[in-house]
Length: 439
Image (tube, rainbow, N blue to C red; front, top):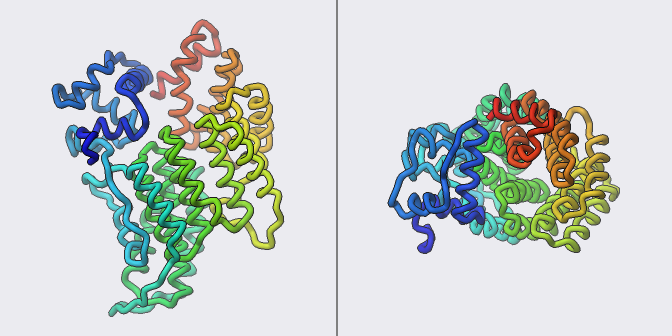
């Protein structure tokens, strides 16, 4: 751990750019969402970080865990302060680390590393390493048999179907995805195969890991999501899948943006974008770059990134878009572009773009619709339109609850302090009651 950051709580707080007062405020908000009251202030955070006091196990520690997106099971299992996200470094890219990265992500027992987050600096360094390191292949010498081609094909086909169902049926597919990835990992680690078969297996492992990472991210389990994206990056690199690797780096950047580290997110995307090949992949990465730049208040660069995203999406290609970015569409450009403009304070145009994006979005993309609706509701609140905000946020909450997406529910719950200013409005009052019930 860095010399100037001696306590895991201080480390986790500094990683997100939060002051002690900001962390205290977030703990109080988490308490409010549960219908509780917390008197936590910055001075109390100081005492926790200097070891002069320990947060209460039954009240304060669960709230701190919620703020940092950590499984509550770790609190009782590991004890204070060992369950806090602390410093760790990803495995360096190389043919020997593809399987270890998978096995690390697949750990099912509760131990320290399951809840340790990668540092922003180490992820930025990993992105730079990915950008300059060419994939290599180690010949396999093993007593085990050769990978069965029919089995590999079956794993690919069934894996693709599981990935397709992963968002809408998360509660049914989560365990199946993990079991499927474990089978693929064993096949990679214990069998002989030709280079083409190796590439297929690593590509499948990367795609499965990416899908699981998104499920963990949506469940607010950020440390484990990071490990699955890390494993996905290793295996995409081992397969020589540059576009897929760039997409995984952009997923990690999106997570950092969610954790309010827009600068590192933008830096990682700078490494990823120049090495994408398919226009759809470039479009998605430019769009995520725009989001990071908007959060940083860089108006000119943000608009150039949005223009690049639109231009790339309209570019012709003889090859179909990779599965991981095949969903990118004008709806995403419009809604995310609107969110960028909202972050930059240009709310009127932001509303127009968000309305356009939500209207264009296919009905099958419920999670994305929930996210976009929450963006719209937040912008309505900023514009002083509480009734529209409440109606829009209610639609988002209903969608998020139906597909069991805790991250999307949390996004709506995070609007509660601003909504509370309009508690006298009937529609807002009704929504606040619903939010207290789900918190």
